[in-house]
Image (cartoon, rainbow, N blue to C red):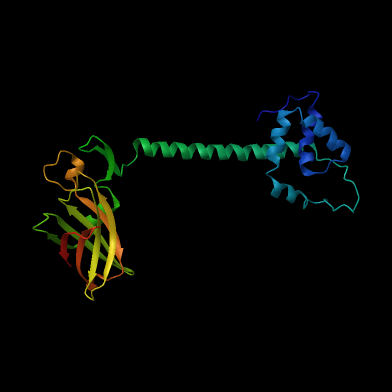
Length: 257
């Protein structure tokens, strides 16, 4: 740790920073140190670091032999230079550890950005713009792949096809939708319709102009199906069917449960 040169004319003032932070200098000593502090960057830095050590400073009051002065009694004793340097060294060590941890966190984040597992791919749309969409490693697709309970349907009019995978949860049903041959721009929702006639929105999404799951599309993005997931309070046994609707109420496809 860098510090003042030993034997310099200001050595005693530098050593006083610990006592000043502890508040045990008398008025004359405190005034003299404050005059030195105004021109000493090193002491100002150490005092700033010591200011954050309230728990340690409070603990010093419990050291053996540390008594409580009577009201009006002046404390003239100073901590030894060794105590001051120990305090400063401990602070420096803690600050260095914090800097090392910050560096490691930044390095780890950079490694994930540059070479880590990628959960999304950037592709160019028909209009030349770039967008990011989930591909086969997305959470929805991963959940869809392991679910065994599936139902499918296709609408003869819209040509949109859908497969809904389900799994029972304590809170209801977790559902994942695979949607194909849908174009946009459009905003849609997946609706669960119960056998009792009640309707619940499981999830909603936007369809870009180039769509999802389009056979023979120009881009890989448009050829890939859409995978979205959500939940319903219904149990799987309580669901009669699923509907994919646009926000304006048009039904794109219906799937019997």
